[in-house]
Amino acid sequence: MLGALGQAIRLLIAGDREVYFIAWTSLRISLVSVVIASALSLPLGFLIGLKRFPGKKSLIAFLNTLMALPTVVVGLLVYSFISRAGPLGSLGLLFSPAAIHIGQIILCFPLITSLVYSALSRLDRRLPETLITLGARPAEVFRMTIWEGRIAILSALLSGFGRVVGEVGVAMMLGGNIRWYTRTLTTAIALETSKGEFELGLALGIILMAIAFLVNFTLHGVIKHER
Amino acid sequence: MKKVLLFALALCLIAVLLPAQSERLRLATTTSTENSGLLAVLLPPFEAGTGIKADVIAVGTGQALRLGEAGDVDVVLVHARQLEDKFVADGYGVNRRDVMHNDFIIIGPASDPAGVRGMRDSAAALKRIADRGGIFVSRGDNSGTHVKERSLWKAAGLEPAGRWYREAGQGMGPVITMTNDLQGYTMADRGTYLSMKDKVQLPILVEGDPRLFNPYGIIAVNPDRFPHAAYFEAMQLIAWMTSVEGQRIIGDYKVDGEVLFFPDAVTD
Image: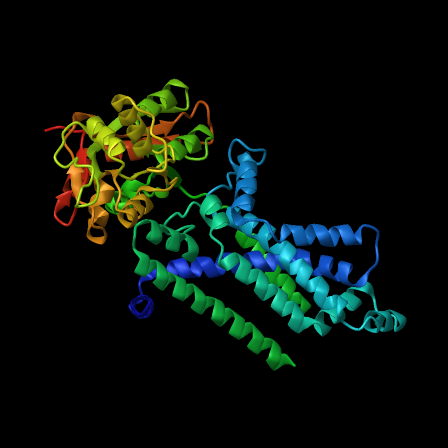
C-alpha cells in the first residue's frame, strides 16, 4: 500500500504524459456526462419535488430502481443499440468517448434526479407559492428554487460524478479501453490488474481518489464562497 | 449566471457530438499481443508513416471475431486458426495473412504434484493432471487459448469437469495470477507468460509439442458486407505487419532478453 502511494506520487511528479492524459480523459468524460445529465435531472427533479401529478409515486419508484442498475448491464444495453448490428449502428458511436457519455448519463441521471427531488421537497413549500403570488414567471420560480437548494443540489451532482468517475463497466464495454483515446483511470486499473501489476493499479486508484477529492473540494468551496 | 450555464452546456454538447472521425482504424486483437507490449512498438511507426490512428481493442479471440462479425471493428489480429477460417468462409473477413507465431506452454507449481515435468505429449500431460487430481485453471472464455486447450482435452479423450477444473472466464493475465494463488496448472501462451513470469512461481513444465504451436493471423473485415469499414486503412495495416520492416520489429521484440513472437510472413 505504501509502495503504491509512493508510486502514485512518483507518477504525478515525473509528469508521465500518459498518466496525465488518462486522468484528464477520466475527469473530462465524467464531468461532461454529469453536466448533460443534470440538464435533464434538474427540471425533472424540480417537477417531482414541487408538483403533484398522477403517476408520481410510480415514477419515483422507477427512478429508485434504476439507481440499482449494474454498470455492466447499462453497458450491455447501450452496446446492443450502438453496435453496427444494432438500431443506431450507423452512427458509428461504439468505442468512442461519446459512447461512454451515453452510458454514464444513463447511470447518473436517476441518481441525480432522485437526490435533487428529495432536496427540493425538503424546501419550504411556501417559497414557490410566494414567488408565484408575487407574479414570478415559471422560469424564475425554477431558477430561484434551484438556487435556494443549491448546496443539496451540488451534493446530488457530486454523487452523480462519483458514480460515473469510479465505474468501469460502461467505460470498458463502450469505450474499449483504447490507449490515448478512451482509456480512463478505471479501465487502466482493470488493465494493470489483469497484467498482474497490482501496485501500479493501486497507484492509479490513488490518483483517481485524489481527483475526486479535488473536484469535491473545489465545488464546495465555490458554493460556500458565493453565500 | 444562467447564460454562462447555458453556454457551458452548449459547449459540452458540441464536444460530445463532434465525431472524432479522423483516420481511425479499429483493431480488435487478443490480450496477448497488447499486454506483451508488442503493439506499443509495432503500431507507432505505422501511425507515423500513414497518418492513420490505430485504436486497439484488446479482448479474447472469440470476442474479437464477434466484434468483426458485427462490423464494429475494421481488422482483427487473432490466434485460433479454425475460427479464423470460419470467419472468412462465412463472409465476414477477407485477405487473411499469417503474421507470426509463438507457442503454448503448460505451467504449474514447482513441486509438480501431478508429475508432468518434461513431458512432450501435451494431451497426455493434461490427462495425467486430471487423473492425479491436480487443480487446472481454464480460461473458460472462448479465447484462442481456451479453444486450443479444449482441443487438447479432446485429444486426451476426456471431458474436463469437477472441482479440480476451474473455469475462470478471464484473460490470460488474471488466469496466470489465479493459477499461482491456487498453485495449480494452466496452459498459457508463452508471450503473456514471459511478460509475467517474475511475478509468479510457476515454472514451465511442458513445452515443445507440435500441437502447442500458436499462429497469429490478421484479417480485414469484409468491405462488401460492411461498407462503413475502414477497409483501405485495414489493408495498409496488414501490409505493414507483413512487411519486411514490420516483421523485423516483431522478431526483434524481446522481454527480458527473450523473443516473444516469431515472424511468419516474410521468410529469409
